[in-house]
Image (cartoon, rainbow, N blue to C red; front, side, top):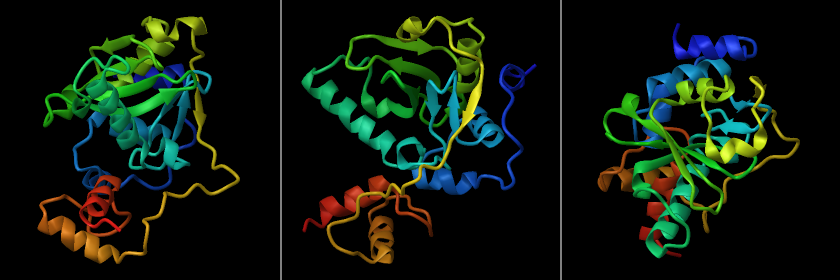
Length: 225
């Protein structure tokens, strides 16, 4: 049985999704290919969290920008890691440019893909950081297999030891009663101008939809107010 099949037996997903995820658009917005196991997992479960609402997995349809795969959090987390890596503030086990945040826990731990080899996403492993501490734990497998191992009790993640076992369940994400927006640019800018600039400078950008955060940031740095 596949890892997804085992996970579905452990914690059945909610009702089947009505509309498929446009993975081509998601990958274009991120500027990278994604592991197939993640795409199947995200398509089957939708946005939400596992293990008694403890492990939140980022999703392209996340109900807020804080749990959205294409939102600002992965890049913000990488920026914090890079600062810690450069300054030695907190231990970082590898170059932050090889880490992409895929989720987090209510205890402050972060889950990452180790994006090596860069062009072989199905070979990416999972690593877990400790909130403001020296402990890192690396799992030699993909995200779906990691969730199966944790929720079935087969894997002892040191950062999760104070939880005494997580329940094998899934909690769908719920839209908050308020709207959370992305910080606006300092002044209104024609998005087509940004797209033209990005293409001229060799940056990947989707032909429509939201401007990827890293492209917007590069634009702002090149066009200071």
